[in-house]
Image (cartoon, rainbow, N blue to C red; front, side, top):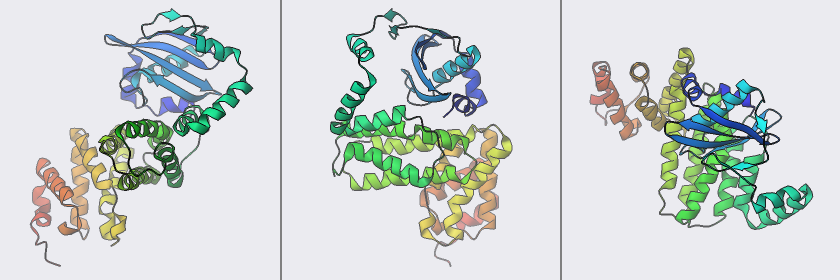
Length: 346
């Protein structure tokens, strides 16, 4: 993705926060590779950014949220945009404390070896280490594109295959390796979802991600809780992304769409239409502002009153959620019949 598009994907609130963070020692270590320190309170974080042909090919930060587009990365990108390439070039590397040091022996050897020799050596290493090969592709691929659900599924399946292969049991260490790799694999997909948040493809990709992970979880045996944590974090991320939409009309369009989809399987009379939208609506409501919650509640009421919905057609936990929303927003009287109806009545 181009740097300018990455910056555009950041909501105004986070962008303003990032602009308040001091960026120190912004330098270009080598062509297209920038390093800087970002001060955040009493902490200082090391951020590295790689750019080729105006496209962001890799970026890291050693903060707790460094695997995502954290505020420290945004701060550096904004500083680079403001400086417009005035960062000075240096041939040294830096420690996380901000002090410069000489290149390591490994780094010096890498600089001396020609590209063909390194390529040949890496090719042999990748034959024996598929997860490392997948990580290399995810980190250095410069291809920018839109994503279909089929492509997202293929990306996830290839990532799973690189770690799990055909194994039926996966120990905790490999589950962690897989989840770390999956976060990297989905990062460009998540950027695409962010800029397409008001389009049908965003929810289609959301469903594909959770369904693909569920298929894998159903065929594997593990005692690790990291896969369950993946669902929670992914739903939470998408809910926050939706609620951070700054244009009110666009946000309302997004809410109408996800609320409708929670009842879609009833109106279409197709059980297979049911997806993970119930979970998303609940998380969107949970992370919404007071004003946003009122709008979500009103939209739910509209569907409960206008659609042929019976309580037994909905997941029990979702029914409880609807009841809590109705009581919380003081609209229970409008939909009381839905909750008191005889569940055995046709």
